[in-house]
Length: 175
Image 1: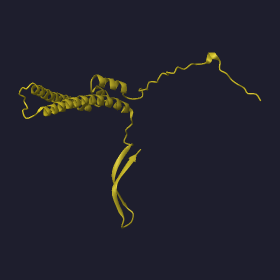
Image 2: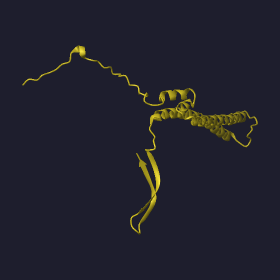
Image 3: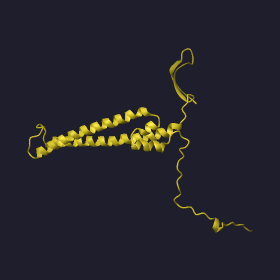
Image 4: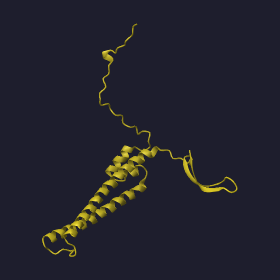
């Protein structure tokens, strides 16, 4: 019994590195480039939405940012007032809140500081949603939405027999 064996020549051997290069996604088929939209929104919030043709979202973004900055300022002012009142209370000076004891002042200081800090986190969240929205909208720019694909809600009436009648709502998905 004989077996044939084949070997590879040393000069044809290819050594592959353990770190194979990752292929970059091809965005050339999409009408909008997601990377460009994200970078534009990172530089100027709302610019990616304008690039994607959804300029109506820009007032929502800036409305959220302006409202959040207002509440950051409001909470910070209240925090500073109560912090100063606590410092005055500790120095046995008259405070703007004579009905509050030290525990009440400490609770207010902590409350307004936490509220301010949460507003900072909300600002980061608004900025992140701006980036995510620009990226996802650019990815979906090539998605085909035609009238042929539709979900319709229609009233439904069915009679099984003269005594058994059915009325309801039907959902129809057309492809």
